[in-house]
Length: 413
Image 1: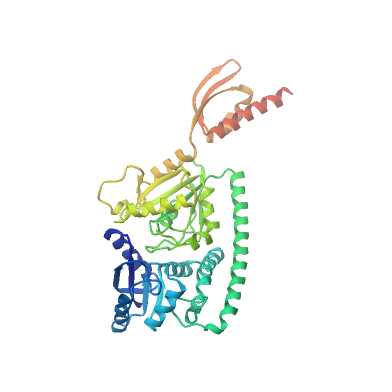
Image 2: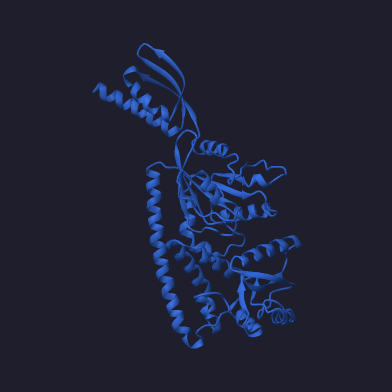
């Protein structure tokens, strides 16, 4: 792994928030094979040339040389000017900011055609405004920040090439959106309810999908940030025997780069069409409340805060404190409370109502066929038919009533 150092510019953050952000940035760096050897912290306004003050940059330069630091990571986005000045000061060290670290993780984890297109578009739109006046950093198009590039003489050629590539990628994503919209319309037509998993990265969404799925084809589930990026849907069976689709989406993170949210719009649109959002929360995280707030903030930005939502607190097998009261505690890994979760899903997706229906003896076959969808609570036999009290989904009760009426009309014609 490369030796790295974090540079944190604090403005109004409290000590607790700084500690959390540093811990998360350290973990992000580890996911691109950079081992953090130390941190430089400064409280001040951003410097237009270096982000940090010149004195702190000089201290950074000395540490880079003394400790053979290969990568320097900043907690805030760097401007083209700041990147250029920092590269001049720090010579051979790679310069990264938090956004580029996240984009690099996404680049490494994307496997499907759709995921690769989304990540490439996000990376190019991030880099394009930073190309003007930059020479050595142009090779970020093909790798990490700070490696040596083709130089200023090819700048305009590269800018035109990047513009064309952004245009073509945007066209491809638009086609993907249309295909996804067609699939959503087909699901609605077939009356297949959809449950979408949302949550902070590494909360255990993929593990839960594997635990509930009817398919033997498991998705990747690892204890690391953004283990999976590609949207995956699997059928699950509820206690009544009904089947619904469970969809896993990209994990969220606080201060999620706007370019990623825009590039992953086709994927995130799956949340808007879901019948229910299942918010998976890492019960063991010391920063659980902050992560929940980050997810809720992103849902608010996506105009999804009004969607039906069920909170699921995962990793209960590793937790010994008082359980939250606003959700269900489970262990996706060990199966704890998963039957209870399935019952809750059924209650949310198929709210029941009662209705009284009179069924002539000649139409009892329709009632028999409907018994796998509606429950017969009470029956009262009469001379010409049966009066039944039924419990079920409103749409199922309406369908049965229409069929009984339609069958009666056909017989009387």
